[in-house]
Image 1: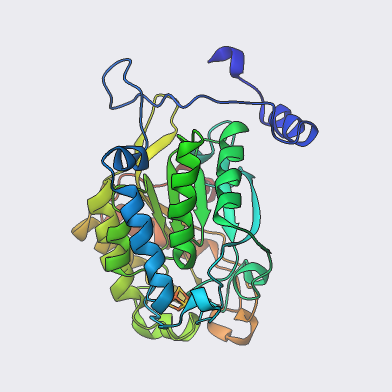
Image 2: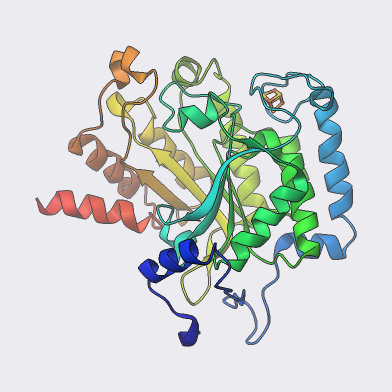
Length: 351
Ligand code: SF4
């Protein structure tokens, strides 16, 4: 692999100059596999079993009476009706690019291949991506176009396809995955979701997604309802969803380069005034999942969008609040915390 090694700066330069076509990074993820055995993505196995096409069909049928998320709007998106998320039946993509700000095991040397979908089924009032998620800015494309983006991401050397806010476009993602598989796609798929999911829908994804990366935003129904457009069932449903994700893919696995190829990553954003319920969250992970679940306790809350109107969350978090959150994770025995969070904690401890 040494002949392929490039610096991040070189990668970005090449990406810009060559329109992203210069590099090809072969997928040979071999950890946890027998020596020499090639890693295969989950969806490839499902296609070989003849089940992927059925899943695409099953998922697409849901557009006719949309129940893709807990909002259960019941609109016919194939006829142009729009539900709470305001999404059409075709995918709307704001951007796609190698992303170097994700978890280090997704980023590696060449970045995580993020595809940012417009619109959202949760719509938090502190959303950092509100022009995309709330206002739906982006380009409407076809599933074939989405498949081409996925292939392009693989060609430029990213380590995975990272679907950001995928819930309302899940059928398109499945269809595009099947098209891209036939064109040679072999990267792990990352389902990067708010966690506001239905169990029945996640079962359609079983055997397709390699990595789940849900948020766990709140543990309290009132906070969820107040800050996420009335979604007071969020804590209950997100806990069920994450438990199901864990059942499907298990704990995070990485190869010898430290690149993730399967498993669960839970993100939890620490919020001011304990709004996110961090202590309850880490206790729930320790008691319900496993103490070695990969958990990213994130310090980067900032006041965005309409959060200025809510005094409780109209400020950033304090150092004390972040250290307290990390302290709870230690108290409840979590052993697989995101290295960046740990570095931030250690930095503040040293000061
Ligand atoms: S995906 Fe959109 S239209 Fe479908 S149930 Fe959810 S919010 Fe409603």
